[in-house]
Structures are given as structure tokens and as C-alpha cells.
Image (cartoon, rainbow, N blue to C red; front, side, top):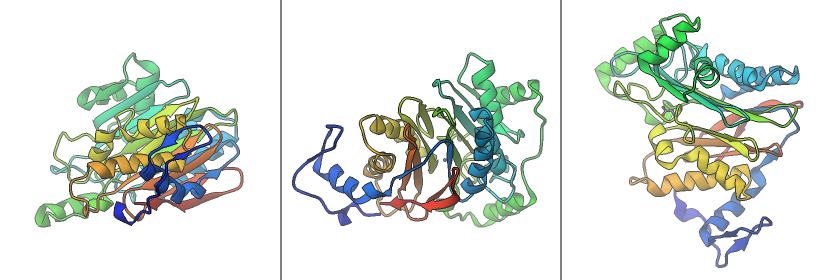
Length: 324
Ligand code: GLY
């Protein structure tokens, strides 16, 4: 995780897009340029190993010609419903008081956005976020208002604290110990449909044992998720505070607009985060993935161990990213 091990070169580089890069940025980009992959449409990519079943579900929808937002929702539901994924939906880690509170966001090809934050007892926050986008004049609903909105649209109240998550929480209350690198495994899913249109969504239970009231990056448009159908899309997972402070997904899309590839853009955004971190030895994780209008995709992370799933007509697998 040390920038010092990077090789810097003496002269700046001009990309084919005509953009002049600073020496340090150009050097680090050279190290990852080969990592981008390209896919035909449709395609779905999604954070972490739970991104493999999520992208499979999304791709199956897309390949059947179904609506891309249905595909995003369906893919993310696979994680929200799975109690073994303790960072998303049902079975997610609760806050310090034992309450599971969920954040989610969604963006469509027209740049419309919807999100929910601090939502309790509703299993599929991504679906509520979509309804906020489609049925209201607002972008974000939070807390009790978000829950009442969900209930008014037929969602059922459910207990989201699984037995396993409750046992872990009780243990934490006693021991007060947690591995901070392992508890922000937000699912973010980006997709391109057969017509080349892009959408994305993000869902999480947030940081384990967080201070009650804490909301992370996932419902913040531009932080954990950004879609610009002319350029591409990006999403984030990991320590939300770092992502929010750098508006990482928006930055990735803007870097792709400047001509950088998805992997390059993600690396630049991770470097931006790293620059701001005071304690460089801290093992916090942030992972970014991105896809551009041509179907090129990639990712990059702050620390070792980040991977993402991809599904298209020829494969459904997990890919590791490079990290600082
Ligand atoms: N990235 C999820 C969170 O920090 O809440």
C-alpha cells in the first residue's frame, strides 16, 4: 500500500486522447494499462465474490431482453437475501445497538437517481431506491420516512437480524474487536444492456457496529455510484467515509470522460483517497469498479484482496484487481 514503490518517470505522457498527464500519474497508469478487459453486450460487473451470482442473475435477465433496472434489482437481490453475506440486506451486521440499517442507490441510463438511507426492517432497499427514483420527485428518502414509503408500496416489515449476525454482535459487545477491512463489502452492480445503455445500483448494511445514525457512501449519488450513459459508470465498496470524502464514483466517470480507461480511472480515484489518508499504514479497504460505453471494464483497490464478478455471453467469473 505504499506509493513509494511505484516507479516514476521523468517526462510527462500524452495519451491518444490528447490529455497531458503529470509524471506520477502517467507512471502509475502505465503499470495497470493492460488490465482492462472488453466485453460484448449485454454485460454485468459487480463487487466481491457475491458479485458472481449477482452478475449471473443480472445477465440472465439482460440476455432475455428484460429491462436493465429489473436486471440490476434482481442481481442485487441475490446478495440482499443471502444471510451469509453479512454486509448487505438480511443477515447484515447491525449497528452498535443491534439494529440493522440499510443504504442503497440506483441510477438509470437517463441519469435519474434514487436512494434510501438508514432504512430498517425492509429486506430489499435497492427496490425501494428504485421506487424513490421512479415514483417520487425526490432522490433520497431516509429512516422512518423511507420505511413508511416502502410500506405504502407493499413492502413487508421483516426482522433482518439473523441469528448469526446477532451472535457476532453480542460477541462484539463483549470484546469490542472487529477487523475493519472485512466489514464494508457493499454490493455494487453495473450493467450494459444489449442496446448499449448503462445503469447501476449499490446496496449495503454499512459498517459493522457503526454509531447509530451513521450513513455511509452507498446512498450518496456520486460517492458509491455514478452513471453517465454517454461515458460509463462506476461504483464503490469499502470504507464509506473515504469514498464520500473523495466523491469517488463521480471522479472515476469524469476520468473516463477525459479518456482514461476504467482501470486507470479507478486507480486515479484510489490514489486520490490514499493521498488524503493520514495514517498510511492503516489497512482500510476501498474497492472501485467501472465500465465504459465500449464495454471495457476494470477495477482497482486501496488494499489487497478486492475482486469483482463479471457475466457476459462467454463467462461468469471472479477477477482480482490490482491495489496500491
Ligand atoms: N461502503 C459501505 C459503507 O461504508 O457503508
